[in-house]
Image (cartoon, rainbow, N blue to C red):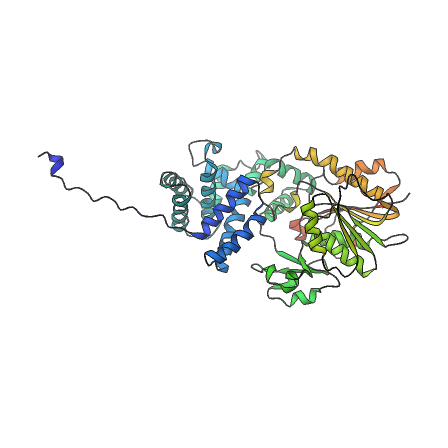
Amino acid sequence: MSEQSRRPRRPAKPYRRPQKDPVRILAFEALRAVDERDAYANLVLPPLLRKAREKDGFETRDAALATELVYGTLRRQGTYDAVIAACVDRPLREVDPPVLDVLSLGAHQLLGTRIPTHAAVSASVELARVVLGDGRAKFVNAVLRKIAQDDLDGWLAKVAPPYDEDAEDHLAVVHSHPRWVVSALWDSLGGGRAGIEELLEADNERPEVTLVARPGRATAEELLREEAAVPGRWSPYAVRLAEGGEPGAVPAVREGRAGVQDEGSQLVALALANAPLDGPDGTWLDGCAGPGGKAALLAALAAERGAVLLAAEKQPHRAGLVAKALHGNPGPYQVITADGTRPPWRPGTFDRVLMDVPCTGLGALRRRPEARWRRRPEDLESFGPLQRSLLRTALESVRVGGVVAYATCSPHLAETRAVVTDVLKQYPQAELIDARPLLPGVPALGEGPDVQLWPHLHGTDAMYLALIRRTG
């Protein structure tokens, strides 16, 4: 008998089934939907959470953790990519996207939350075993153990270039924005380092949920009776919900008498409604009305004055959302499916016109963090001609003496002042109105006459507004 045959055999290590963690599996599924289908997290996550409540008995804290994992990972994706790249032996493009999603979720737990290190690593490795298999789970384990050797500040010191050598790239890595977005926001904001860092940090914070009480149907006082509700900062119709507040639990929201609407969006509608007007004030237009937040507020304000709103939206499914938002309005209104660049109405028909144009959405990166990674500089080339065409339509649609509001949820100069300046060169019988007095109490509105709101200054999305009166 050989020496080897006399040795006792070690018992085989028993196979252990991977432990399923419903919270992290849901977060992984949401990230895969964002990556594979170009979906938006704010649209993907709610139905996943509803299903989890019914199937897995999700509690409030489970939903809160899943939400933090998804949004936190997306917001900090650029930073985590730089850290992960320093811990793997291949370019990130060669790492399978599902593996990268698990690594990013793990990196966020290690560097962006207070989850203990051992729990963050073990939970991520278990997730990898469930969704990727044992082989790739070992790779995940090795990479996360490297990441766990330092905290976020330590990693940033290693992977971000010094500010003095490359300011834009430093800010891009530290604050997790593409370099071109950092550059564009800096140009729009002006000023030095402090302002741009405050803005980028604000983009990475979870935004408050803001409700709007639709006039004639609900009041801010009614909404303030809800738990965790506090007054809005600037709009008389705004009410903010503290962290964890659920809009769907508010009766007025369920009944359509109130809605979820950023305060900056409310201010744009209010500024148009309150702009001084010469002559009649009976017919209003929202020329790009989807998904319907501004249209619902405008329709309610119009009804108080005996005016009528026409809400036009090019995409049929978005027109359906507008109709839903306006349903129950106390006064007459109409919703149509129409292309604002080829309007079916006659020129000079309206007294007030809102044209909230399609844009890159760089002003709403708090709410749609994945948009910063999805957009490209060349997108400006496709939006620019459309934005100019829609503003020309607005100026042709308003009567002499009437007012147009050009609005966009982007602070990029190519989508804001450049558009207004170019179009007004073609319309000498139109003039800019100072919009600042129409946002009473709102500070830091600049030199005017247009207005740019900012997350870090006003707690709103970065909405842009220019008010234009047709003079002839």
